Each structure stands twice: as C-alpha cells, then as structure tokens.
Image (cartoon, rainbow, N blue to C red; front, side, top):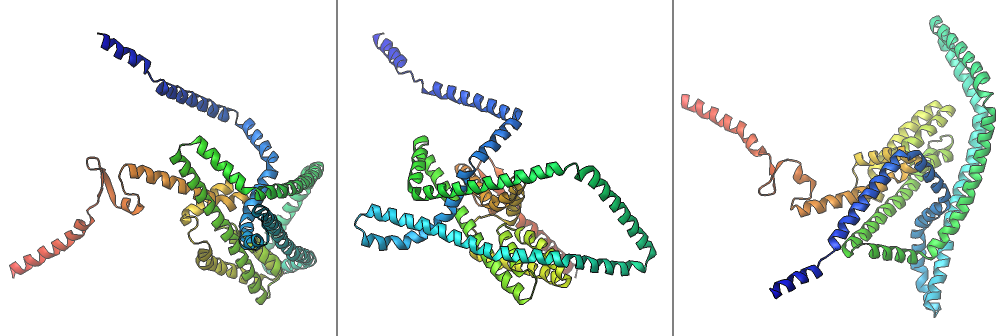
Length: 446
C-alpha cells in the first residue's frame, strides 16, 4: 500500500504542464491571427493607407538597400584584387580591410556615377535633337499625309463626305471639351504640375539619403549578415534555421544571377541595336538604342515595349524605314531569346516560359513597371520554396519526386503506396494480335 501511494505521489509530482501550455499558446495564436485577418479585411482601406505612408517613410532605406545590393558585386570584385596588395604593405590587417572596403565602396559609387553620366550624355543631347527635329518636321509630315489622304479621297465622294462629317463632329467635340472640361480643370492641372515638382524634389532627396544609407550598409555588410543569422538561429531550431539560411542563399543566387545577367544582356542588345541602326542609317539611332536596351531589362515583353514607340518615331520620319525597323526588332528579339539570353542567364530562374509570362503579368499588375522587372526572380524564389516543400512531403510519403513519374500515372495504390501506370504497351499490342489472327484465318482457309 505504501509503495502504491508513493507511485501515485510521484505521478502527481512528475505532472508535465508543457503540452497544455503548447495547446493554450497555439489556441491563443490562432484566435489572434483570425482577429487580425478579419480586421485586415474589414479595415482594408485604413491598412492600405498606413502601408502607403510606411512605404513613403521607408523609401530612402529601400533605395539604399537596393543600391547596396546592386553595388555588392562591384565591391567584391574590387576587394578581391586590392586586398592582397594592401595587406602586404600594411601591418594592421583590420585597418587594411577597412581601407580596402572604403576604396572599393568609393570605386563602386564612382563606377555607377560614370555609367549614369555616360548614358545621360548620350541620351539628353540626342533626345533634345530628336524633339527639335520632330517639332520641325512633324507639321510637314502631317501636311504631306493630309495631302496624300486628300488625293486618295477626292476620287471617292462617299468617303469624302464621311470624312467631312467625322471632322466636323470631332471639331465640335474638341470645342465642347475645351469649354466644359479643359478650362475649368486648368487650376487642378497647375496644382498637379506643382505637386509633381515637389514629388520629384522629394525623390531626389530620398535618392541622396539612399546613397548615404547604401554606403553604411556596404561598409558594415558582414555585421548585418551576422546579426541576421544570429536572429534566425535564436528563433528557430537548428534544422529549420539551416533551411531558412539555405533558402536565403538560394534566393540571393537567383536574384543576383538574374539581375546581373539581365543588365549585361540589355547592354549587349543596346550596343547591337546601335551599330545595326547606324549601318541601316535609321533616324534617332542613339535614342532608339537606349530605349530598346533599357526596356530589354523587362523579360519577354521588354523588346516589344521599347520597339513600339521607337517604331512610331521612325515611321514619322520615314515609313519604309519604320517597317524595316519592325522586322529588325523581331529578328533581334529572336536572337536575344534563343542565343544571347540563354548563354548569359542560363537556367538561373528555373521557370518555364508559361510561368515567366504569369509572373510578369501578376507582379506587373500589382506593382507596375518595377513589378515587371523583379516579378520573375521573386516568383522563381516562391517556386523554389514550394518545390522544396512538395519534395519534402513526397519524400515522407515515399513517392517519386520527379514530375515525369506522374505524367502517365493513373492512380495511387493505397496498399503498396506506389503509383499505378496505364497499360499502354498492351493497348499497342492489340492491333498487332488482331492482324496476326486475320493472317492465320486466311492461311487456314487456303
């Protein structure tokens, strides 16, 4: 009896509260998440306004982080060659590293500034000349078009009457629009221009602050990386923390490979476009080449987005050359899509053409032009994470992880946990058996 009482007492003292705490904490988190989700939907406008304000406030930091990320490969390249030389001449290795880091960051900023300066030096004078030429030649081109249209229409009285009616109606519509809509809205237009100037000044200020932030980030990037890893290992178990850090490394690989490769690809396309248009004696050569090169950063749709306005510009100067330019852009896009792009980018994203178009349309609809640029690598990261999750689940279920194994699968055998495939070979043999039987019947009759 005493031993039984002791066992019962030990059971009471060894009572574990942890499972009940885990259940209570999980229930609490579920309730809080449900309330937060309901509040997010019910007060979506307020949450959206707060998010917009937060984006505006954090804009300098966002610009700084983007600049730091883009300049990191340049800084690493410079350090790779400068650090051994400086370390040989300085005894204090820490000071040598700090000095090399400062020189590399300054060199990266100077390199980016020189590239932007060269592009502006090429584009702004050409843009000024192009606009000047368009202002001078556009009325003459419109008059020649109208003369050609008048000669063509004069032979057909019915078409001329329709055109005259359309012109009178459009003139009346324009006069009514100017009186009722345009003139009353001039004050709003002036206010909009003023606010646009203020936004441009704010953006310039944010860019300057972002450059300063990027310098701080690049000078202490190892500290930021170490702090991030420390937080991950503190919050998550070892296996999950390793998975998170591996996923971040893979995401950086996808982003870095895609962005650097796409910039190089666009630079090559812009140079090819310039020399080709120069040899073809096209108008607005520099301007069109810059437009085509810059818009080529957008995957799939980029060449067409840059080619359409460029074709219109060239057509205004010379319609035949505009037609030649359209053919040239189609050929250049095929060369880029099938030869240059795959050589530079390779399979950096791991996405098929369908998912590339899907990512561009989805993120372009959400974020506009920036979404079209970063949509493919972002979706590639999401796709990579989902693929790893699916592979992990299939591995636990002891099922094949390659997609080809499921193409001809008919069902899953629950007893053996294996895929059952269609009996295609037997279906193919049936016609052969029927032919053989017919031959045997004929021979027996003979």
